[in-house]
Image (cartoon, rainbow, N blue to C red; front, top):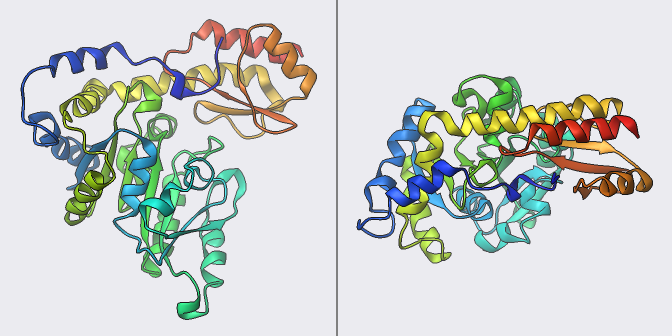
Length: 331
């Protein structure tokens, strides 16, 4: 009974079917019919013109998006526990040719206008310091907390006042959308670039970089090629994305993952460190209690000395979630 990561989830059968259907001759790279149709699909979803490009990994998606708004001498304000800081092996600095991450604090790994403002207020020495050029927020955060539309609007307002670009790491954007129950437009807000995650939500190897400033699309196309991410048979990546969007499969999968987490959260009760909003839970637990759960067949990651992380997925068996919730309640 595995609760390690939604990255370990199986590929949804409808994606295999879509890739099989795409297994026919077409033009290479991103000139095939499926790739060319992505702009229109995401423009319809967000109600404004955008450019959509596939890449294989979330790390590449984040870095390519940030590269459209940050110079090599610039900086990106992000949370000190953001994925781009903690889990991408310095890739932002690599892709952005030396640009720096400017770290801010915030409860639950969420930024606020105040926390961003404190970082900006410390940049006072002209060319002697790295200038902030963008803000990066994660929807939902690394601790499974969702930015509500008003929170995003406040960050966007501050960023615009300082002339900063706004990037959103949406690795679990679908789970945030399922929790908020509002249009995708409001889940994203008036940002410049969104990395729309699919791999954690039933995809195989395709993420979408959504640019709301379409004039910057060519910049990503060149950088994607230079970074080794322009796949020659891009139609298979595009096919995955289309299959996820068809009949809102992306939302169906996210709702299933969130529902499984909610079952566990009920059993965890006061052990929950943060509210259960998406498919990611952090639970207080000592070493003996962890050993007891593992002895019953549950797998999960230790987060620190006092807590564990539990992640559900679209294919999590509700009976397994129920068993884990009961096991935690019985500790």
